[in-house]
Image 1 (cartoon, helix red, strand yellow):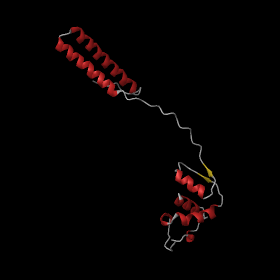
Image 2 (image 1 turned 60 degrees about the vertical axis):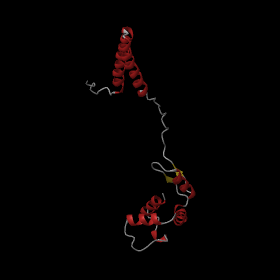
Image 3 (image 1 turned 90 degrees about the vertical axis):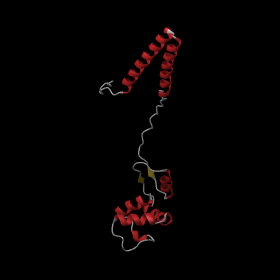
Image 4 (image 1 turned 120 degrees about the vertical axis):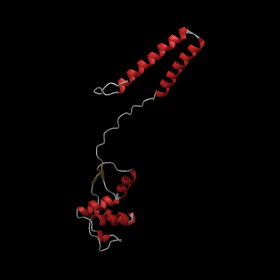
Length: 154
């Protein structure tokens, strides 16, 4: 945050890097100044920026961390935060895939049980349940698909 503030002040012509303790004559370009600001401690930069800013208002662009906001408050700078939209209500979904798989496994187990017991009624009921499961699965795939997508192939 201090590096960003220092770079913006330097571009505006309000900050002279010679005031920094780590300044050396080999400062050639923006990258060297950025490196110098990054190596400088906050204790060196803070009093310098407080005297330069002197109550100027800073408009925050984008997102700023809580530490950055605390730093700006320590500098004594009024902050203008951008209008942020209210967070949308999050919709929570319950994943029903395990329950569907357990249901399909129980229906298939019921069919094999009916075959072993020679129970024709149970076998027919399990077949109807399995057909209903396939039908539900087909409709659930169509609900998830976008409207212009091709139908699934078997």
